[in-house]
Length: 451
Image (tube, rainbow, N blue to C red):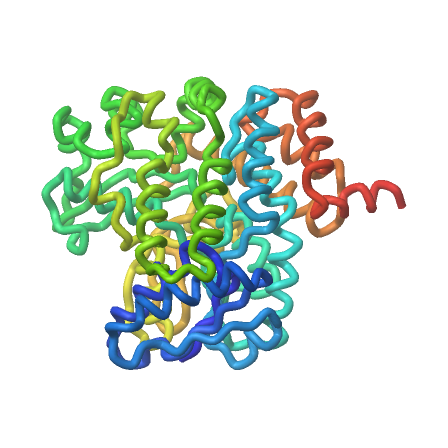
């Protein structure tokens, strides 16, 4: 079995390779192709993978190419983890938004819209190339904004593209620990969009045990979401929100904390990774050790401003370990390739799973996965406030898709202006102008307007 990784020089690729090394089952991945346009980054990641493989018998062979068609030819699975504009683009998105007093974050608010506007055209071209060069391949998308990009690619690939995220699995693991139950034996009733979902029930033996957790102050505040949102708010909404909903529920506090920070999250990660790649390239030391140290720094500072604003303290040590999206990706591949039937929370076309959204809207819900792919399971209706947020943000996604596919600058402006976290058309106009100046990838908007 062959896996092609788009964004093969990306920092998190060793997590995927580690999961592949641990998989000794029948029909496992035996060849990994790294596709990236940055030879220095790819070479450094290649060093890390070689060290990871050194202690394993018969590890998956690794090859590298900058030619997309060559990377796709004959592949079984494509893992997409590209970052259009790099981390410098993310840092610019965040700074532009914060200068206007609105949220700066790569997948939420103005930053997410900017990231989507420059990423969707590239994702659409990749989808077209996959369909032409590897029509039988399955695409597993981790490129952010994951729900939006998956929906864009589905226009060419249909159900052969599946979006993944590590947030729901991390939440499920933490909630299960607080309840004292084995997550493998529990059913997590989770529904929404990527980075905009809610855990509404946890069923063990057919009984919902979430109300007991909500009533237990000590247990409820023993894990990250409880400390981040506060027990009283979780009881008020009767659910556990995805951690990214902190940006919506505590927008003013999050913006204030980010503006007070010496640098944005994007700028911090940019500095961390720039140092890692520069220091590791050609170094006689261990690339794997350098990668592990940098990964630990990255994970320990994740959502640091939000935790500071909420007084939530440091991340728990268990949340610094790997075991998130890479294991979801592996489970998806094994379920499809070997018909190892399983249920996972994934980003797929709605197909009636969430009432109030059309069938083609990509949602994040529990899915049944087997050799036929991932099929969403019907959920109970979202409550009014949740449905309101979901439909508002989906309207933003659709405006981004319109802008990316037609070159419509008014659609791009609309995407920014109608986002719940951008509270002014005037601010949206200024942000769009700034993002167009910051990112040459958005030139297509001006080109269309000039014609």
